[in-house]
Structures are given as C-alpha cells and as structure tokens.
Length: 255
Image (cartoon, rainbow, N blue to C red; front, side, top):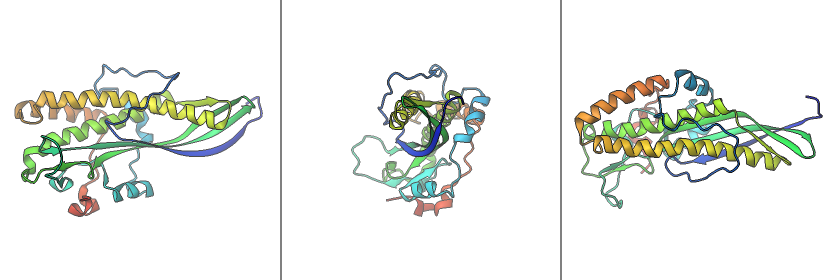
C-alpha cells in the first residue's frame, strides 16, 4: 500500500430473524443476485465458496448461548421440538419458526484523514429452529401428520442461510467512510442489504411452499415438493448432522 495505513479490529453482531427483517440499505454498491432463481438452485460452487461463512461448530460459546435461549441448529425435526400452546391466536395447528443470525468481524484500514475502509475478516452465518416461537396445539399428537411439511419450512430457511453465506463470499462487501464509525456503518448496511435480498426470497418461497402443498394437506404435492427439496439441499451441501437429542431431547425444548 502506498499510503500509511493503520489497522484495528472490531467485532459486530447483526442479529436478524428470518421472515422479520425490514432494514434496507441505501446507496449500496452490490450485485443483486438473481431473485428469479429459487433458493438452492445457485451453482454448487456458489455454495462451496460460502461454506467458510457457515457457523457449524455447535460446541462454540456462540452456539451454546443460542441453545440456552432455545435456538437449535438445523436438524431433522421431531415432535419434541415443538412446545404445546393452545392459547396462541392463530388458526394453524402447528407453526415452525426459523432464524438466521450473522456475526462478523472486520478490520479498519485508514489511508488518510478522509478515507477509512472496513474490511470483513470473519463472518459466521448461524441458522436453525427457534423453539421459543415454534409451537403445536395439544391436539397435534401424531408427528407423522405434520413433520414432513414443517421440515420443509425449516429446509427453506436453511437454504436462505446458505444463500446468504454464498452472497457474502461472492460480493466480499467492504465499508467506506471518513471515520471508522462511518466505514463500519457502511459495511453493516451492505450486509443488511444482502440479508434483505435473501429474506425477500425466503418470504416468497415459504408462502409458495404452503400454496403448493395446501400447507401439507395435499400429500401427493407434498411428496413431489419434498423430493425436489432434497435435490436442492444436496446441491447446496446441506445435511442435517445435528440432532435435537444432542441437547437432551425434550429437555432441549424451551417451554
């Protein structure tokens, strides 16, 4: 580098809940990904590049902290994952809620008094199933009736998370500004924009999934969609390696 540079590290956490984020970035220099493509249909190489940003060390302090609050890693759902709630204001009999968290770390490069860059050095996309906000009614006592459909919602959430990781690898976002705070805000706005792109697609696909399968009631359509989902998961390199029993079965569910 031709100019004097100073470096320091900063850590930041962008906590975003799947299907809830509404933050928009402004003036962003990013490539929008092809929103016409379904989640899971990007190239296998796209997902391989993003693999380094996937948080899958379930013994890490960050994951252990999430699990204490009922956020479990992506896995094959069981009946024990769902708390019973007959008081919830909904016409549904069961509800699956996923989450996507992004933790990141950056370093600052100060070129001169008017130019500072925030360079992403680490990013960890953590995703899975939220036991606090997912539920079933007491009448739903046979998991075989609803688990396949609810698993599909969880699968779509995981495809969204892997797409976010791939977009971070593809775009390599950096923040720019006069001060370090300016640069950090710019970097965060770009990360939020990437999340927004994925969240919008996630919204569409969750709604389309319910429409295609009549919320799981159309068993033939559900079987077709489930088979297609399996191909997308394989293409994205997603496997349900964690099991809810790892956290103690029923004890893993926060009531």
